[in-house]
Length: 558
Image (tube, rainbow, N blue to C red; front, side, top):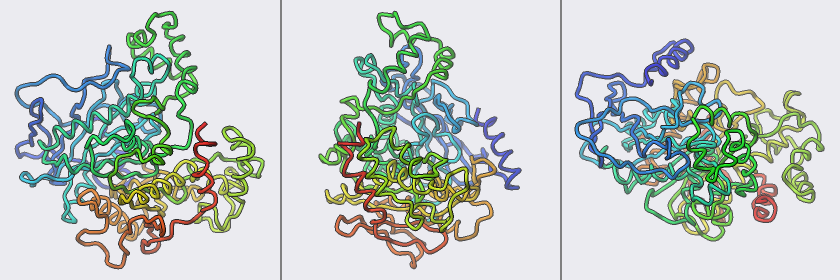
């Protein structure tokens, strides 16, 4: 499967880049092996990167047939002789653009391990990647998240790490919610998949040369929100599964409805009705017996979606409340967002104050709508997409799009990022906050430094492996972009290696060290390609962000 998939992607890349983007070459040396609890895996050695790949390694029993819509089950078999771990698994079933190039399956609970070769007698720190995609699409095998580049960078700066990426159940398959689901205790399965993968790493990563005591979980968007949910899981219980976390455009605080069956019961009823399970005495068990193709086709016809929900178990209550109560795992973090997050999230066609207010009226009380309008004025000098200067966006976006985008970026990501950093600092736990401020190639000017734009830099994916040919991040960009990717990927590696983001060989001495967040002197690090990256006061849009953070419980969690 991998070879066919990669042949297609690399063919597209080769046309646009004029190079070979092959992720690995199978050399003539003996294949690498790893002896885990259940048996032995045989991987692939990459001569190009001098790395060993173990791909498509199962960390749970396949969640199919009677295990559909159940808690993930640990592997319960052993075997003699080596098993192949040489190809990425199929992605979990999802719905969205991230699945475009990839085959999918219910049988999808697999992970990938990428390690640098030649460190057989060392225990290397581990970077555990959780992909994003709105909890509805994506996968660990998405080649934009190819771990080879950041692992290669770790060796280059003298801080070698091992990379792990995972799949977890998505959408209806991973986050089905209803009274029946709650009653059976099978809520938030996608998050529980992640948790079981972390347990698997604790039990088995030493077999690959990794140190189970030095695991850092990191993710972007829904992946970062997942990291947040792992930090607050079971009321903030510390199961010693990780020693640090990195949250990119997502946090333990999610300002929105997570109110269980009030939101999802109607969608559940629609599904069971259409597949003929309405009259079953056990409707959830009936869904387990529905053929996959039938259930998948049915879900594609209903309105509504499924995502993490407060269940009183894995997710005890809103993240904002748990952070207020100190109910989170006390480990160092990096937390940040992009300058123009909201430009990727805001409705378009926002021409007037009335247009902006109409988008708020769908979820906010009238009095709070007016407060938001006052806190987010139509002032181009303070609104996001600063790269447009004093210009209005194209007519299709609307004259007041930048005003709207400022609010939506703060609402979804930036306000919660600031509150998370403040909470960590108030508890005396190291936190490093950042703002990413570089526009990759292929991005419309109105989007600017929007959501997801840091990914190619953080992974140092200079070739744009896995990207569409029209949005290769570094195409046509100068050396300053390559240097920013070098800085960002090295910073992440340094934090994973020894929890210090600024201490590594080859760091540009003209770039200031990244300070820990301080409640009394809040500062974040700005990753910028147009000027030397720098440190700034974390006080921008103070009125609007404070309005959001101060009214979470009373207004936003409804």
